Image (cartoon, helix red, strand yellow):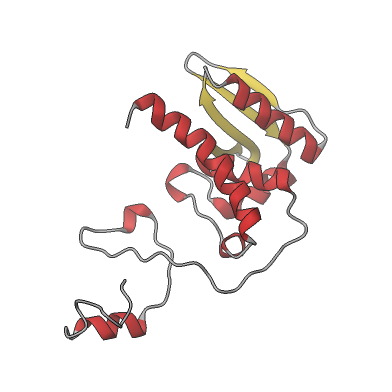
Length: 173
């Protein structure tokens, strides 16, 4: 989206309509089509939720990167799980320690053939992450997290990028 002054498309019929009637909406990546425009903006409002600790915000970033919810038939969202590569032991320990700081309960680290899984079976805690999406293709950042002060947003972003960038570097993308 470009500003109305100096816009190279300002004489086109569709440009002013697009600019004037635009309202921000969230779309999942699978809903985007070729030639869609993606407009990025920073909300003008800000709300500092004092109940969100730095540790919880770190966990949000890690969850958006490598987390999902699991559970049993009777309680399908009762287990918070993070899946990392086997070589990411330090990150797994950091996630487990952060969970313990927040909940007071030990997170388990399970090693499989190809991965490390960090999990905690604490349904009330795990359910706090439903708002971010349960599985990878449904991940999102709720609006109330988008309007946090920039310092709190940086905590989420830095933990998200810490693991994402590690994965990107390894794949040499």
